[in-house]
Length: 465
Image (cartoon, rainbow, N blue to C red; front, side, top):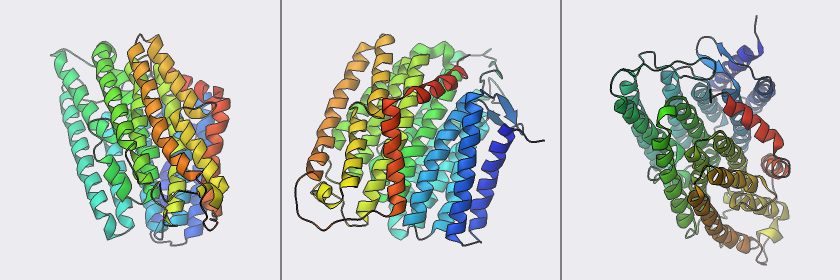
């Protein structure tokens, strides 16, 4: 007899099988509709499991509990948006559908695995499939794909070396979570455990785009098809943050001061690097690539604070940025097909298509932290958690970086509303749907953030035992 947790994992497996079948059954529309229905079913069942606070092991491999279900719900909703963009803009949707399905299964492994091995396999699946997604668009994407592949291989190798050290403490390599704790046998030198966690942190920082392991991001994001850029910035990076939260708050309880300082430094350097570099960009896609780096720095503030409130704030900002960046890259993607790429090219966008101009403005204001949008509330929570955690300087640095970001977002907005005569632009229904959903989430949960905060609170309580 199947129960709801079993059904969620079973649907994820069916989705992977559906993607593989799509390679042979080349009916784009049928494949898109089938996958969308499966995604919707997973979102609905996962939402139910989250608020019912289900906690169980499925098939002896997947741990279905509030934290994993929260991120599963988020990633499913986000990947449904990316899938829609791929259907509209890719000529090879059948191949992309398979790769997206495999990548999604990797995400399921990362957030719900019961062991490090399954988590690393999940990260590797995500990295490899993303590199192949970039290649699907043609030979001109080879450079971006190779850069992502090589750096992904380095990251996984570093994490695997960390696992080799952890093996000495716990040969099962189990992840101690919630009501299924596995206490590590630290009978030897505990400094080796710290070394293992540091190595894991370095490896996962490549995936999360934390400084100085994020130098590849602008080139890969700019060189990739924009619907894949939306996937990398909006979802892949957030999978890495889910892994960071899961591991460091499961294992690093006795070393919280060391890792708090580590993430504080990562947060500060990442924010400054992303915002300063974004302020000198002329290409809009590259600007948002650097902007996404700075957002990673904001998210890391809550992890550095290392409190329940801080993690809730980080998770809230993760949700906010998923929809902000996917929405922004959707508009960038649509305009790319009109040969509109630079800030100068965006001049007069408001007079060519008012809806897209206003939508992009709302998304940028949210990224900058302007009320009453979701990005503002996320930053407010992050800076409040820093103050509450006696890290006033970190909060001030975060606020300073928010002001820096207003400069380059303002520069783009100024261009958008500069009056210039051009032909009108029209948005297709698929692009319009994704933009509308992203903007709606940013506005609704900015004005009424309680549901997301409640869900984030439930998720955090399930890992802090």
